[in-house]
Image 1 (tube, rainbow over the protein chains, first blue to last red):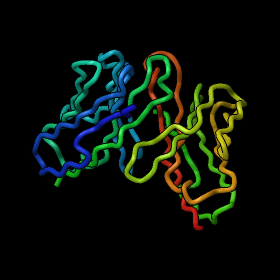
Image 2: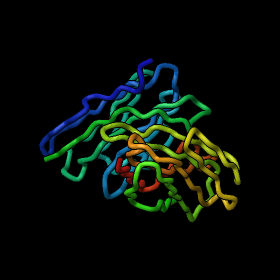
Image 3: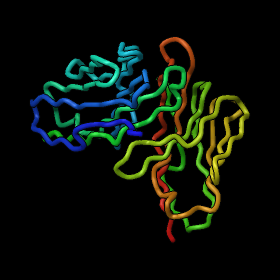
Image 4: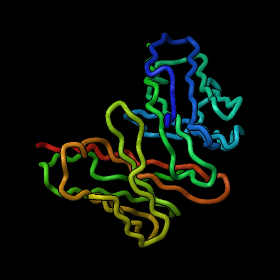
Amino acid sequence: DAGVIQSPRHEVTEMGQEVTLRCKPISGHNSLFWYRQTMMRGLELLIYFNNNVPIDDSGMPEDRFSAKMPNASFSTLKIQPSEPRDSAVYFCASSHQGSEDTQYFGPGTRLTVL
Amino acid sequence: GQQLNQSPQSMFIQEGEDVSMNCTSSSIFNTWLWYKQDPGEGPVLLIALYKAGELTSNGRLTAQFGITRKDSFLNISASIPSDVGIYFCAGRMSGGTSYGKLTFGQGTILTVHP
């Protein structure tokens, strides 16, 4: 079975550019999570969705960040405009509703903003 | 917000040695989890603990949910080279807006010398 799929795996962009990260959760999972990992702050939850509806976006750093889940099999995390301090690894994870502890993580997108 | 203090930050051990790491919190968690992250990959769930005092094993791994619900430890017995990676504890509070939201520790970097 395919796990969580993220694209791209690596992204290098210049400050001010728009960045879009993509995630396909595991089929049948109805909870989806976006995390950011940095050396300084570790793993931080940015936002999570349940049945395509955002439940908690309190971790989103600022208005430059936005996330959508138009259907059960696709989500995007957008940063506009990007800044060097956004450089990090961004993970998407999914789980069954009621089993949110068992989150399956994707391989991550390593974002570098120059 | 909640913070998890994970220690040690890093460990360098010889193959065959036992390993112990722990996590403490100023807040009470209803679930404790331990994840492992290999280089270039997302975290993978190792063990989940749901009850204070619970002791659970998964092969050479053993984890316990502290009776105060503010701490947990993970032991690895007879370490092997493939145990190398970053180990994260995570806690979850149940109910309300915290549902589904994991708080992660800073991680313990484990290096095993053959």
